Amino acid sequence: MPTLNMTSGNGESMQLQVISSEEQYEEALAELDRLILANPPAGTPDADRLAVLSVLVEKYERELFPISKPSPVEAIRFRMEQQGLTPRDLEPFIGSRSKVSEVLAEKIPLSLRMIRALHEGLGIPADVLVKPVAAEESEDEPQWDKFPVRDMRKRGWIQATDQEVRTNPGALARAFFAQGPTMPASIPLFRRAVHERSGARSDAYGLLAWTARVRQRAEQERDVGDYEHHKLGDDFFRMIARLSARADGPLLAKASLAQLGIVVVIEPHLPRTKLDGASMLSWSGRPIIGLTLRYDRIDNFWFTLLHELEHVQRHLRPTGTPDTFIDDLDIDVGQDELEVEADRLAGEALIPRSVWRRSAAFRERTQESVLALAAELGIHPAIVAGRLQRETKKFHQFSQLLGHRQIRHLFGLVGTESNDGH
Image 1: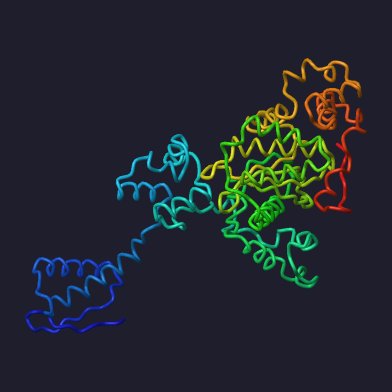
Image 2: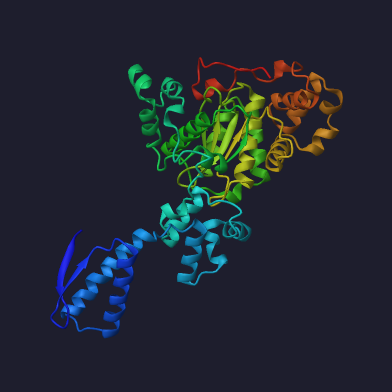
């Protein structure tokens, strides 16, 4: 055991050694107390002995009584006490007053946006703000070889040889996610940050890869203005709906949203991730709408776009949870209030309910009445036909008006597999 010979104030040679037992610890504490009370002058043997003994005692205490990392809420409360902050002062970093209360009461976890804002704004270490995932929930990080690397490579998301895909898919997945500012912490954490309207068998790893790809592509967009949330009113939604009457309407809608700071990304879904669209925040906090165009139809494009736009307007917040909505619009919304609201308001933006209920299209359900209502509202007949199909469940009625195979080619998706059925 390492020892150190030092001379005490009375000239005696005294031996110090690394503390390795409770008995030695008690002896060291007694000697430390004596030296502190003596308050030896600097530069004397006893002052040197006091300094060395303090280090040895501190080392033993760190090993015997390790200090655990504070919980995220403990770290936030400590910083509040340090800086004299009130819960109201946390609103710029966390969100509304109710959101701050829920976080401080540990009713909801911190989102990635909150963590970034608290780290940058209050200087709280990010690793302290990230709450570890329980061992029974997940490993410390994703199982990288579970990502659909073969399909990701087929889409051009990953550049690799067949041998690399077979022998080292996990490394390829890691490299893919390294293209963004953040790496996925765990699948449970991803699930908590996502409001998911999809089937129970939907592949979480595929969804995570798809949302990362959409975010990567959104970051590459250049002709996008500053986000102007206040302009997302009824008039803007009606203007977007009326663009459906034009053959190039989808492209014009994408450009109009870009002017308001909202990026629209067209990215077909991966296998086992059946979905129509998503709304999310970019790593820098910009709203993104991702569309898969799995149904290459005019009515589906416009309803999905307006549905996701409603999420952007009403449900996405830069410091809130969730920060991603994933939607398979074939799934019944049930009691999901956010999805019910987005469905209702998207339908209202396309065809106001007051107009719909008094229209001949609703009462008579003829092709002539469908065309007349579309002309009255200045929208594409496919939107009226699609609404009748959904409400009557007669999916073969007016199918010739739905605008099959009229969307993908506008975005350069020529030759991709179509799925027009229900």
